Image (cartoon, rainbow, N blue to C red):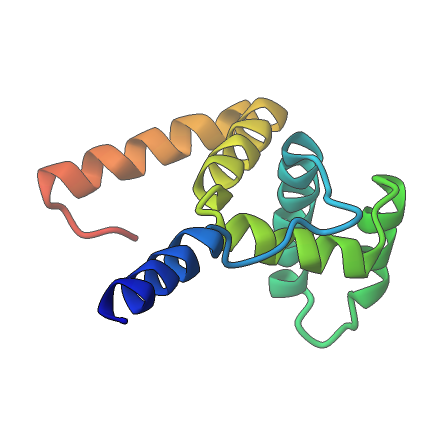
Length: 121
């Protein structure tokens, strides 16, 4: 009887290898990085114009990349749980730095200041 319970416990442990099922319309990692890069730019516009509703900008970004909002949300959850979001975020950062070379210098300067220990402005 103890052996039978042990077998069922092991079967239960090994049969549940994924915490989340792969979404039906999973957004590709490269597309996710591009969308996130564009959303970051839009977020900065939201910061500049706090009294404006920028929801249309978010919808435009998703539409321009041919991604449905529900697919984006499900893919985002999937990549976070699968611990792949950090790579996607790094790729999005690289996309932003290619779009604005001045940002690359700014980021490097801030990192140097942080290493030296000078206060960030």
